[in-house]
Length: 432
Image (cartoon, rainbow, N blue to C red):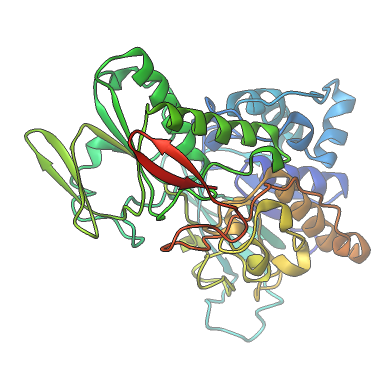
């Protein structure tokens, strides 16, 4: 099927990089993007500044494609999502030209004339990528291979601690948000709750704490499922990404100032609406009352429904590609400990299908752009028949300075951190 294109799903950073590598090797590529332009998902968090610096946010093949057209790679600084799109992703999409098709939603991937059950002749049949355009028109694209770089942005995790929406979560949806806020001025004088322990939650807490410092009566409560703050604030001086380290350090100062109330071991079970706002109820029956708004920032999960007729192998705990799951498990590893990033580890039981980018990590929160660029470099080398390049590992990741493991999820502490103690109001709270 050499005359057919490699179809890439998702025109985000990894999808565009994959198209650049395919173009460089002279292989036909078609990139299908659901949004109205490339980088649409990144634009939705365009107000957030990245931890990675510019040199870590551009792919080598993409640079080689862009530079002859007069584009120059930014040499320093930490862009926001919008700056990343405007300064790199949009120019790359423009250079790729008609290889990028926007406004096209992939609804399914199959083999021509074969559903998931059929073995006979399966490997010899091309892929069929089922699509729908903005007007609801349906189409089919035949492909020699498929690279799924569709990400996880459209599937935020719920606030409920057991992985399902808490009781009353759907009914209270007008008072819940699942994205990092930009303009928080509407919450002046309100009681706002943030659920989550990752970088997104930390961003939200910092934005809201600044509002609390300006507007009297504004309350910020941070709910953590873990029984301590170990590892929540990052690795400090041991973190090789300075912006990530600065985020944790800033959050530590805000907590020490008493501007944020931190409640640990709080696993949301129910939202109850009343005349005086929401009451958030934990599994152990503790309550946070008179809440005006909740930011549930508990991570993302992949949507694999489009691959339901494909034979795929995902880790049962992480929903990550099984071949890399052991190295990205957040119970054990930080982002600096990953080495399995190539085509061999990403290969699926369905030959010619690869899941890359944030989606390959499933629910693991440690994905970095550098990882995705290395993934697509190796996958495209494999598709081009360049075995040596596909097997070569060119990835060097900055370490977090802490192990990201859950470690003592119930008992406190983490698998690498040395606990200390902060005074928050009148209560001592252990931190890593």
